Image (tube, rainbow, N blue to C red; front, side, top):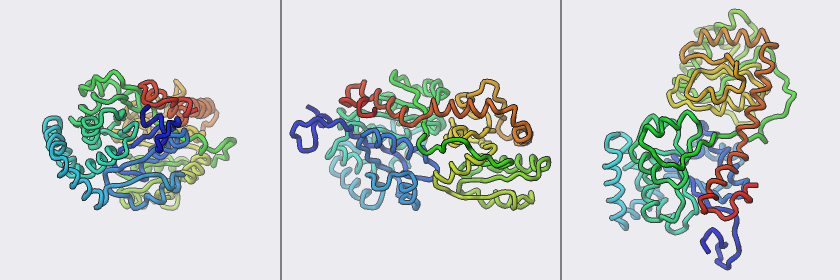
Length: 422
C-alpha cells in the first residue's frame, strides 16, 4: 500500500484524506481572497492541506486567516530560518542545486529579471523540497506558475512519485517564463481558470494534453439569501487600489452620472498604493461626501455592501484581468455589473443581450450605462436574475473542488477522492 492508503502509524488502516502541499508566492494576501475560498473548499472536502509560501508573511496574515475561516491551518512562509535551512540543504545537495541553476539558465535566461528573482528564492524552495523528502505529500499543487515552477522541477526530479498539479494564470501568459512552460509540460494535472486562456497557453508551447479549464469559484455559503434591500443610487466597486484596476475611471464615470443623478453614492472597497491619488481625484471632482473609501474589508462586509448595491463597477485596464471574482460575487448578490472588455469577460455574461461592457478607458460610456441602469430598472430585471442564477450554478467552489479532486482521482493518485469530496 502507498502512504496515501495507510495512516501515519502504518497499521494498514485506509486513510481517505489526500495530502496536498500547495506552493504559492504569498499566503494569505488581501488581493487573493479567492485563494482562501479554494483552500477552504479543499479542507471541507476532507483534504489535508499545507500551504508553503515562497515570500515572507504578510502583515495582515493572521487577520485574513481569521476572516477567511482558516485560522490554525498549516501555512509557512519564507522567513530567515527557512532560508538558512534551505541554504544548508543546497550545500548538502550540490548536484540538485547545480541542476536547478542549469535548468533555469536553459529555460529562463531570456527573462533575466525573473531568473535572478528565482535564484534569490531558491533557498526557500530547497527548504520546501527538504520537507517533501521528509514528509511527502500525495500532490504538490502550484497555485501559480512562474517562480514556484522551479520547485516543481526539483520535486519532479527527486520525488517522481509525487503528483504534480499546476495552475496557469494570466501572469503566466504575460511573463511567458521558460521554467513555467517546462514545468507545465511535465505536470500530471494542469489547470487554467478561463477558457480564453487555452489558446494562449498552447501558443506558449505548452502541449500537455492534461490541460483542464477549472474556473475559480465563490463560497456560496457566504452569499446572503434574497430578498435584498437594494439602496437606490448605491454603487459599489471592489478592487485593489492600483492604477491598472481602473478605479479612477470608476470615479470619473460616477462623477459624470452624478451630474444627472445627484443622489448617487459610491462605496470603494480595497486598499493599495493608489489610494491617495484616488482620494485627491474625488476631492478635485468635489465628490468626497458622495464617495466612501472603505479600505480593505472582511468578506462579510463586502457581501453586506453588495446586497445593498444597485450596481457594481469594475473598469479594469489590466492585461492580466481574467473573470474577476469580485464580479461573480456582485452578480451572486443581484448587482448589475458594468465592466470593461477584458479577456474572457464574455464567459461571465450570463444574459446574451447584456450590454454592460465597455472598452478599457471608456469611462464616459460607462457613465451612460450607469445612468440607464439606475433609471430603467425594469429593463434589467431579467439580467439581474439570470446573472445571479448563472453564478450560483457555474461558480460554486464546492462543486469545482469536487471536479478537481475527481481529476486527481482519475490519475490514480487518490483512493476514493471523489467519495471524500462528496
